[in-house]
Image (cartoon, rainbow, N blue to C red; front, top):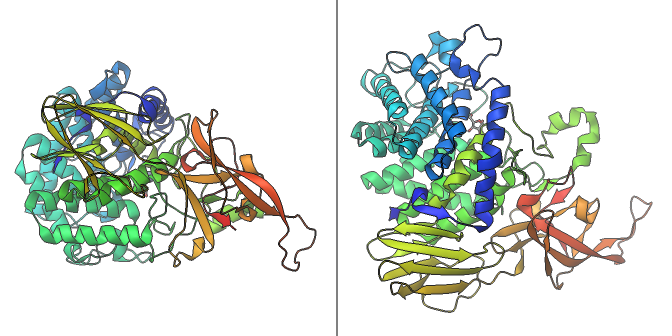
Length: 598
Ligand code: FUB
Ligand code: ZN
């Protein structure tokens, strides 16, 4: 399948235009300002006398931000942001070693330790700089940054693949593998693709174990990648690895790599993914754990991991065109990813839990938060480890990447966004208020076209011609097809083996997961029981700019006693549900996605 990159598509209105405008007008600057305050920007000056010691992966934080700016200016000029990027590129040029090496920490702080410890993120930083350089080249046509990164990639090839004198073979944090594929595509230099394959082929072949606090599976280095069948270890590293595996499976027609990716994907979606599309449930190692271990209150579900899952699914879609990958993209997109930033675009979650109980912080005075490692309850502007905010800055402007694929027979529509696209000589216009409702009008112009439209996972019965999950339309030049995917509130239950959700249900409408918040429903959300036979009523909450849902529900009567005989006495209440991604925008509040029903 051919991909259709976001620069061939313009999001013209609706839900995603609002978010793209927010990133352009607010978030990009807000993230930059916090990076400036914390010393991340000045770190590129390589001032050895600076009082602020750079962190080993500050390069990557800023690189992701630069990549995001490249995507913004690819669509519309942003002179101020471009000037900042130009300045950073000049600093990179100035401070890059003659050999091509570039890394802030390992030049300013520990130059003697270059390529010594695989877990010190040098190749991870290099990969993000390369992704930024490729994006900036596509956006501006200017080659300087790309050339600098080619020089660095050549040096990495020399040290790791030719001379083999680096102290490790494969990086502890994957990223460079997928970046080298992009470098190959931007430059046509096959050595970069081969270097990516080298890192993938070598991974897990021999022990590169360094620590006593984690196993090799933390870095997905426990066995060669083609033998891996389960999603293990650090979730962001894992998804970035799986991206590169899928990239290489496609380019080398490597069926063993493809098969490993398919098996791992099934393990994720059948055992290890939250209803929100969040992955990596454990704080210990920011990692996947055992099947069905999906605690809600302490869900780690890093924002970058949700992005990583989408990136992986997109590559699998290009390999197979199977709708199941777009289903997961949609789930993560509207839930576990979207919750990562506030409605005002200025603050962020790193963890995206499915339940919040602020009172637990008081359990044991100040100690508790640290002792049981609860996720924070309100978004913040920057983190000490601030990988997620710039990942959001690069993700949203490029979100149209997930809309279409095509081959010589048809154009495939995967996601629904008000937009105009130019694909293989055809202009496609989508008119839609999605995800507010499921009405989508698609017009094709330019030539007669077979259009295959993904039928979303929540649609129970689709009347009409369909094959393999796609609705099929043979359209004449100028034709419009109108779809109306029914979106009604649906109660969802988890597999009985997910013990944390036992006896509970969640509410979804279309692609959106809903939740209850204290600010609407009072404290102690765990006692609310939804009437299983309730009529749901839908309304727009203007303060959240979102469709909310009201349902009949019950609470038990308050009592002074700690224990009483089982009673069926109930107080009737109305429960108000808001889209999960809008939680924590009105102050600290209890929240839950899973609740009782009777
Ligand atoms: O280590 C670099 C980034 O910071 C990872 O991708 C995140 O999980 C966080 O650890
Ligand atoms: Zn992150």
